[in-house]
Image 1 (cartoon, rainbow, N blue to C red):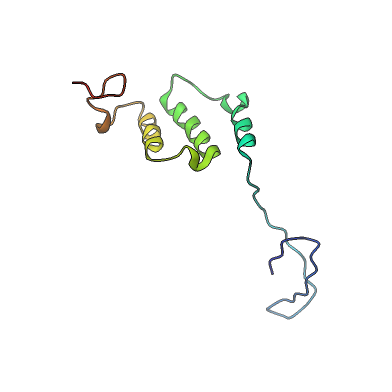
Image 2 (cartoon, rainbow, N blue to C red):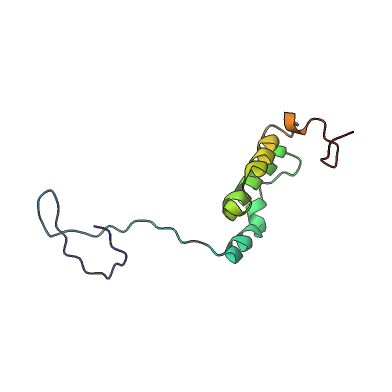
Length: 107
């Protein structure tokens, strides 16, 4: 039986043997973080101790962590595509071919 509070009285019995001598098992739960708490966690320099700014794959791992922390606010197809490009070692994708340094098409 699922209860929302440990203090909530229950009159449960085992569905197999009918005994009323049961123990409560507390499950894990998640609490949502506020945006302020998420940003504070991202500002912690210890989170980036293993970051190598010269390694595109390391940058991709960091971006994934940020994306997971921020949730749907930053994730999307463009975000995923940027990470995938970094995971390939910074190689340009077919989509990026023909784009100049500014990200606009060369004429």
